[in-house]
Length: 178
Image 1: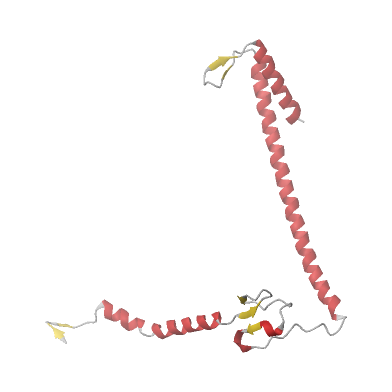
Image 2: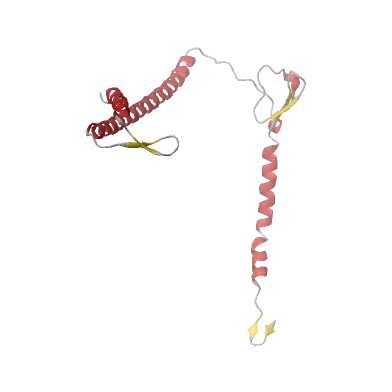
Protein backbone atom coordinates (compact mmCIF):
# COMPACT_ATOMS: atom_id res chain seq x y z
CA UNK A 1 0.00 0.00 0.00
CA UNK A 2 1.66 3.24 -1.08
CA UNK A 3 1.94 6.00 1.48
CA UNK A 4 3.01 9.20 -0.20
CA UNK A 5 5.80 8.35 -2.63
CA UNK A 6 7.08 5.42 -0.55
CA UNK A 7 5.90 1.86 -0.69
CA UNK A 8 4.85 0.51 2.72
CA UNK A 9 7.63 -1.65 4.26
CA UNK A 10 7.39 -4.26 6.99
CA UNK A 11 8.22 -3.00 10.44
CA UNK A 12 11.12 -4.46 12.38
CA UNK A 13 8.70 -6.38 14.62
CA UNK A 14 7.00 -7.98 11.66
CA UNK A 15 10.35 -9.02 10.17
CA UNK A 16 11.38 -10.49 13.54
CA UNK A 17 8.18 -12.52 14.00
CA UNK A 18 8.35 -13.78 10.42
CA UNK A 19 11.91 -14.97 11.03
CA UNK A 20 10.97 -16.65 14.33
CA UNK A 21 8.03 -18.67 13.01
CA UNK A 22 10.16 -21.60 11.74
CA UNK A 23 12.01 -21.75 15.07
CA UNK A 24 8.90 -22.48 17.18
CA UNK A 25 8.51 -26.08 15.98
CA UNK A 26 12.22 -26.69 16.55
CA UNK A 27 11.98 -25.46 20.12
CA UNK A 28 8.96 -27.71 20.75
CA UNK A 29 10.81 -30.69 19.28
CA UNK A 30 13.84 -30.03 21.49
CA UNK A 31 11.65 -29.86 24.60
CA UNK A 32 9.92 -33.12 23.69
CA UNK A 33 13.26 -34.87 23.18
CA UNK A 34 14.45 -33.54 26.52
CA UNK A 35 11.37 -34.93 28.24
CA UNK A 36 11.91 -38.27 26.48
CA UNK A 37 15.48 -38.45 27.78
CA UNK A 38 14.27 -37.69 31.29
CA UNK A 39 11.91 -40.66 31.13
CA UNK A 40 14.87 -43.01 30.58
CA UNK A 41 15.19 -43.84 34.25
CA UNK A 42 15.18 -46.88 36.44
CA UNK A 43 12.69 -47.29 39.23
CA UNK A 44 12.84 -49.96 41.93
CA UNK A 45 11.93 -50.63 45.52
CA UNK A 46 14.87 -50.92 47.89
CA UNK A 47 15.20 -53.28 50.86
CA UNK A 48 13.44 -50.76 53.14
CA UNK A 49 10.42 -50.52 50.83
CA UNK A 50 11.20 -47.04 49.47
CA UNK A 51 10.92 -46.26 45.78
CA UNK A 52 14.24 -45.34 44.20
CA UNK A 53 14.59 -43.43 40.92
CA UNK A 54 17.93 -43.42 39.12
CA UNK A 55 19.52 -43.16 35.71
CA UNK A 56 21.69 -46.16 36.59
CA UNK A 57 20.70 -49.78 36.94
CA UNK A 58 19.86 -50.99 40.44
CA UNK A 59 22.50 -52.84 42.45
CA UNK A 60 22.82 -56.56 41.92
CA UNK A 61 21.32 -57.35 45.35
CA UNK A 62 17.90 -55.95 44.27
CA UNK A 63 15.67 -58.86 43.17
CA UNK A 64 14.05 -58.79 39.73
CA UNK A 65 10.54 -58.54 41.22
CA UNK A 66 11.44 -55.20 42.91
CA UNK A 67 12.38 -53.50 39.63
CA UNK A 68 9.33 -51.43 38.70
CA UNK A 69 10.50 -49.58 35.58
CA UNK A 70 13.34 -49.84 33.08
CA UNK A 71 14.45 -47.15 30.65
CA UNK A 72 12.88 -47.45 27.19
CA UNK A 73 11.08 -50.68 28.06
CA UNK A 74 14.30 -52.67 27.73
CA UNK A 75 14.63 -55.87 29.65
CA UNK A 76 17.25 -56.07 32.34
CA UNK A 77 20.12 -58.26 31.25
CA UNK A 78 22.78 -59.03 33.82
CA UNK A 79 26.37 -58.83 32.62
CA UNK A 80 27.43 -61.97 30.78
CA UNK A 81 30.10 -64.08 32.49
CA UNK A 82 33.48 -64.35 30.82
CA UNK A 83 33.33 -67.22 28.32
CA UNK A 84 37.01 -68.06 28.08
CA UNK A 85 39.42 -67.76 30.97
CA UNK A 86 42.21 -66.86 28.51
CA UNK A 87 40.43 -63.58 27.66
CA UNK A 88 40.38 -62.48 31.29
CA UNK A 89 44.16 -62.07 31.73
CA UNK A 90 44.40 -60.00 28.56
CA UNK A 91 41.66 -57.68 29.81
CA UNK A 92 43.13 -57.53 33.29
CA UNK A 93 46.56 -56.77 31.86
CA UNK A 94 45.05 -53.83 30.01
CA UNK A 95 43.35 -52.68 33.17
CA UNK A 96 46.50 -53.28 35.18
CA UNK A 97 48.58 -51.31 32.69
CA UNK A 98 46.15 -48.41 32.81
CA UNK A 99 45.98 -48.62 36.59
CA UNK A 100 49.74 -48.81 36.90
CA UNK A 101 50.11 -45.82 34.55
CA UNK A 102 47.67 -43.79 36.66
CA UNK A 103 49.46 -44.83 39.86
CA UNK A 104 52.81 -43.84 38.37
CA UNK A 105 51.43 -40.46 37.31
CA UNK A 106 50.00 -39.91 40.80
CA UNK A 107 53.34 -40.83 42.40
CA UNK A 108 55.20 -38.51 40.02
CA UNK A 109 52.80 -35.68 40.82
CA UNK A 110 53.23 -36.30 44.55
CA UNK A 111 57.03 -36.34 44.18
CA UNK A 112 56.88 -33.05 42.26
CA UNK A 113 54.76 -31.52 45.04
CA UNK A 114 57.22 -32.71 47.69
CA UNK A 115 60.15 -31.32 45.67
CA UNK A 116 58.41 -27.94 45.28
CA UNK A 117 57.64 -27.80 49.01
CA UNK A 118 61.24 -28.71 49.83
CA UNK A 119 62.50 -25.96 47.48
CA UNK A 120 60.18 -23.42 49.15
CA UNK A 121 61.47 -24.46 52.58
CA UNK A 122 65.08 -24.14 51.45
CA UNK A 123 64.42 -20.65 50.06
CA UNK A 124 62.61 -19.62 53.27
CA UNK A 125 65.49 -20.88 55.40
CA UNK A 126 68.02 -18.99 53.23
CA UNK A 127 65.92 -15.82 53.56
CA UNK A 128 65.69 -16.24 57.36
CA UNK A 129 69.44 -16.85 57.52
CA UNK A 130 70.18 -13.72 55.51
CA UNK A 131 67.91 -11.55 57.65
CA UNK A 132 69.29 -12.94 60.89
CA UNK A 133 72.88 -12.33 59.73
CA UNK A 134 72.04 -8.73 58.78
CA UNK A 135 70.33 -8.14 62.12
CA UNK A 136 73.24 -9.70 64.01
CA UNK A 137 75.78 -7.56 62.17
CA UNK A 138 73.73 -4.44 62.98
CA UNK A 139 73.51 -5.49 66.62
CA UNK A 140 77.24 -6.23 66.82
CA UNK A 141 78.14 -2.86 65.26
CA UNK A 142 77.34 -1.08 68.52
CA UNK A 143 74.82 1.31 67.00
CA UNK A 144 72.10 2.39 69.36
CA UNK A 145 69.01 0.22 68.67
CA UNK A 146 65.40 0.50 69.68
CA UNK A 147 62.21 -1.52 69.40
CA UNK A 148 58.52 -0.93 69.96
CA UNK A 149 57.06 -2.47 73.15
CA UNK A 150 53.53 -3.78 73.79
CA UNK A 151 52.26 -0.29 74.62
CA UNK A 152 53.44 1.06 71.28
CA UNK A 153 56.28 3.02 72.89
CA UNK A 154 59.85 3.06 71.63
CA UNK A 155 62.40 1.63 74.03
CA UNK A 156 66.14 1.51 73.54
CA UNK A 157 68.05 -1.72 74.06
CA UNK A 158 70.43 -1.79 77.02
CA UNK A 159 73.38 -4.18 77.24
CA UNK A 160 71.30 -7.03 78.73
CA UNK A 161 68.60 -6.72 76.05
CA UNK A 162 71.32 -6.58 73.36
CA UNK A 163 72.83 -9.80 74.72
CA UNK A 164 69.44 -11.57 74.74
CA UNK A 165 68.70 -10.37 71.18
CA UNK A 166 72.18 -11.45 70.06
CA UNK A 167 71.62 -14.96 71.46
CA UNK A 168 68.22 -15.18 69.76
CA UNK A 169 69.68 -14.12 66.42
CA UNK A 170 72.61 -16.55 66.80
CA UNK A 171 70.11 -19.37 67.41
CA UNK A 172 68.29 -18.46 64.19
CA UNK A 173 71.60 -18.36 62.32
CA UNK A 174 72.62 -21.76 63.72
CA UNK A 175 69.26 -23.27 62.75
CA UNK A 176 68.85 -21.81 59.25
CA UNK A 177 72.39 -21.24 57.94
CA UNK A 178 73.60 -24.76 57.19
